[in-house]
Length: 124
Image: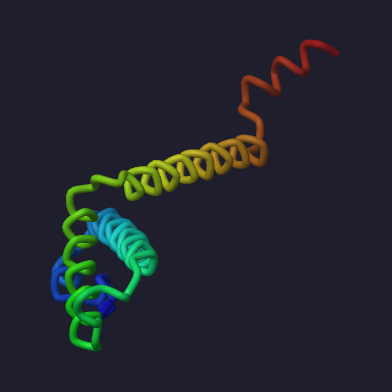
């Protein structure tokens, strides 16, 4: 598989602002799914015996690799395997837990409010 970093493409360079992080994440997740499906197809091809009518040479193998790359790229774009969606959901959950933990930390370290001090004084 000819690997090109999707985050270094002109398409990724045009993305700017707040949307940039989300779109770069989507692009990276799609590339992960592309790579997974490519490896899956590659391993499946290894199970097919080479002793057929026509022997496989370097050109045939290159053609099969290019075909597998094309198929895996289209499968990744359509999201048929769902790996990208699972990874994206995992990222969202981790972000949510990190934000919640940060909010809890801020609440614990912030000074008490004025009305809270008055309540404590009345108990004495």
